[in-house]
Length: 285
Image (cartoon, rainbow, N blue to C red):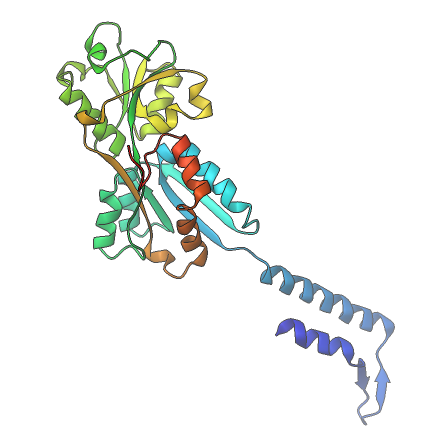
C-alpha cells in the first residue's frame, strides 16, 4: 500500500499555489528533495517487505555439532531468516521456559522435560522424538577403546568428568551406569561435574580430568574425534536417553519455527543425526 501510493505521487505533476490559487511550479531543488524522500521511503518499505523471520532454539549440549550442521542446511533455503541456537542443560532450559524465557523451540536430551511442559500448557506442538543418545567413556591422553567403568575405580584415574546429574540427563545416565557397575560410591572424590555434557567434555579436553563420560554425539564430532578415543557404555546399565523437542507456546504463530520442526524429519536432517550416533525414530537399534 505504501509503495503504490508513493508511485501515484510520482506520476502526478508537483506544483504549489499562491494565495489566490494561481499555480506556481516548485523550484528544482524542492522537486529533487521530494524525489529523494520518495526514494528513501520506497527503499525502506522494500527492506521491510523482505526482512526475514527469527527463531531462538534452546538445545541440549549433546546436539551442538549435529544441530549446527542442520541449521546451516536449513538456512540455505531461508537465507533471510535468523536462527539463534543456545546450548546448555536440558533441565535448566526446562526451568527457564517455565519462567517465560523467549525460546521458540526446545530440544531436550530427556524427553520427560518437554512432555512436562506440554502437560503444563507451555507447548504449541506435540512432543516429537528426534533420537536416542548414547554415553561413552572418552579420553584424549589414554586409549579409551578397551576401557570399562570398573577401570575408573582404580588408581590410574584421579579426575573423572561427568555432567551434573541434578539437571543434565547425560549426567544422570552416567550416574545410573556407574551405580549399575558398582563403582559409584568409590568414585565420589574423583568426580568433576560440568554444567552440561559439553562442559564435561571440555574438562577432559583441557586436562582438568583424565577421562569423561560424555555423549557419543560429541565424541564423534570433528573437534573431539581427532583428539581422543572412546568406548561405548552398554545401554543396559542406564535408562534410555530418548530425546525430544517441542515448539513452545510462545511460537504458536511462528511459521518459521514450525517449518524448522518439520525439517527435523527430513532425509537430510536425519542423515546428519545418524552420522552423530543418534538412533532415530523408526529405525532399528
